[in-house]
Image (cartoon, rainbow, N blue to C red):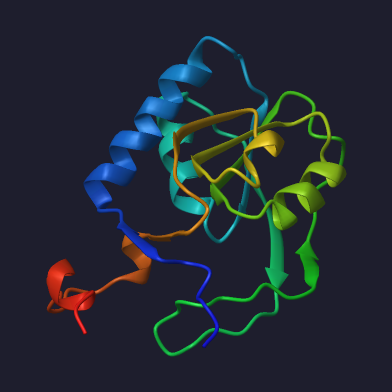
Length: 167
């Protein structure tokens, strides 16, 4: 039986996401001023909105990248496919914050970083494989952790951890 790449589950609430975005803002405040924000869609949209408010940035753009992947019915074993740019931005990113929710394997980060080499790349969460590609982040999580963002969740019953590992 093949082992899934994610053995740990890390749910993030709206409160935690907001708190971590504000913590990121504190770190970025002293590094500015910034010309604007470029959010990597879709994960970077919510953190970018919070950063824009906290740093008083009015110029916000998006870079829209998709990867065609497959997942099981729980979204657990997401396999990233080929990257495709739906919408790009002009320039090299100088003076801009490039924002995403997390950096995982670094595949998307490397791709976007090559497009905007002078942007200051920030994420809320960083995994070891992608961490070297990010300039500033709030929290590091292990590579085998699946981060569940609040926009991907709904409230349901949770099986106790002890019951998940028995048998």
